[in-house]
Image (cartoon, rainbow, N blue to C red; front, side):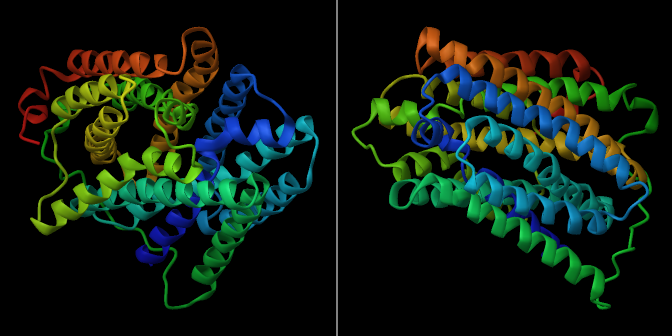
Amino acid sequence: MKKILIIMTLVAVVSDYLLHPFYPQFFEARFGVTDPELVGYYFAAICFMVMISFPFWAYVSKKVAELNILIYTQCIAGILALFCYWTNSYVNFWIISLMMILFKGSYLLVYPYILKITTKKEHSKVIGILSVIVHLGGVLGAVIGGVTVDVIDASYIFLIMALGDFIQMGMSAYLLKNKTYDTSKSIENKKSIAFDDKIIPKGFVLKIGLITLVLYGSGFITRPFFSSYWEYISIYNSKLVSGTIYAIPAFVALLVLWWDIKIKKTTSSGIIVPLCIGILGLWIQGIPIPGLVVLGRILYGWAVFRAIVRFDVLLFEFSNPETYAIDYSKVHFFQNLGVLISSFIVGVLVDQYGLEIPFTVAWIGFGITLVLFAVFFKIKFKSFILKAT
């Protein structure tokens, strides 16, 4: 059953990321909107809907089984995606697409659900796989989206989104109706972690949430205008090339996971070193030389994969299966709050200071993340965070 759920997650992420690198081009082609601030505000609106969506569905999942929720929410999301394809009104697009995000966000329940049916010893491996699935989804989404924008029309992306939502609906129904799979299964996970309960910091979920708020916000601020930045500094004007460069961190994450599996290494416990390398990778990307931008994407891809996976591992190590969805939704709320803040300011920053400025803000944000992590955990986790990566 885990394999099917992982495939479902991949379908959801691909569907979610199809238009991410190309919103500026989409709004210009579809509605004639060229103001970068308006694009930033739309990203902010998306983030806000995800922020309220996941905690809401996590609360609902306490009373209704996750897969039962997905059948209905993904069906509605698919129908709304079709309306996004049909509408020619800028205002209607805002309303319909944001409602679509509200229902589409329920797919995030699959992540804690998979961990609930997995032993804690397997969490590190599963979280690594799921993180790569997200990155792989980003790769496929960016490439498929780029081809669609280049060869057909950006509006057709919403037809692909609808197809993805209906596939998820069908897979959820299949798992529920097929007697081969026990969808009520839940692994009894005892708190057999490497630390004594006494050293678990008070407000651990809040601290992880605050740290990752800055981390996710810093990473996201480089995304909305990355394809525009690449096309500005390079000789390539192809959306496919832009989408491929955009997806380099995802390719790197795939390679890292493949290497870890090959040498049978569990997900690294180091956080400080990845954050430092992430700062370097973001700084290099801000230098408008194509070769350096590619190098920076590679470094950043390795760093952000290591850091994000490890923060998720920490969260689920100290959480209980009964509260996985709720705890993860709380942290996810903070992460999307960081993305929301970035969405509000990125358009203004680009408009005032140019396409390079997001990378400067991002590496400074990674530096703040490093400081916050050291302040919160440097004493109790000193030996833990400095392990080799």
